[in-house]
Image 1 (cartoon, helix red, strand yellow):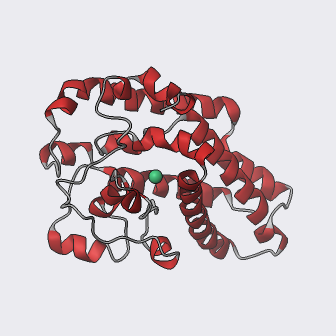
Image 2: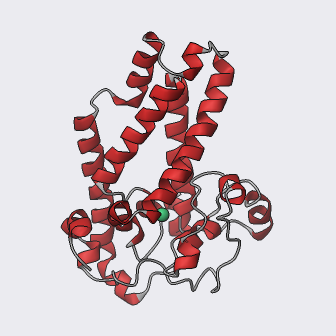
Length: 249
Ligand SMILES: [Zn+2]
């Protein structure tokens, strides 16, 4: 995806953004490393190990009901994806959570590095939410790994600064969150960012009434990011991102 967006960028960087681009990339990848490090400190064995432990203890619906493995894997991946859709909506809706999630949205450009730019506390909160689901449902460990790989893969796919060929995009958007649809979610306009919450498939947005198929501006001209966080140096520095939730704006 990085190679594709370097060769065929959908949107060009503004001059202001160009001047802070190396710092921005360092910060986005820096926060990824810090978030991963902190989440490993909080839960050293990871979610899949927790799922194995839950299975040993016969915790959760699928374990109690002795659902066939293939069915529990398919149902778990789908239910976890729906859970992440609602988690995303809640992080936009509840002010306390929004202060964490805005670190992701303050990025004035959307590319692969944006897909990885999440505040460590948001990552840890998300792990505990998923842990709750593993405990209640009895999600098999293989479904946890499958889901994490798919979720991260799709996030990198739909944040990439590319545009699928028109005909491919028209078909893809009937199932998937495409780059064009996800850039609408990164618009500065509230009614646009308050839509297209899905990270992988589009059907949760369609089902729960948050789907927007077209922005008011063309894809190349959508104002990306947050008005209160312009393309300043602070917004492109690692410490600026880590401290963002705790500063008044
Ligand atoms: Zn969001």
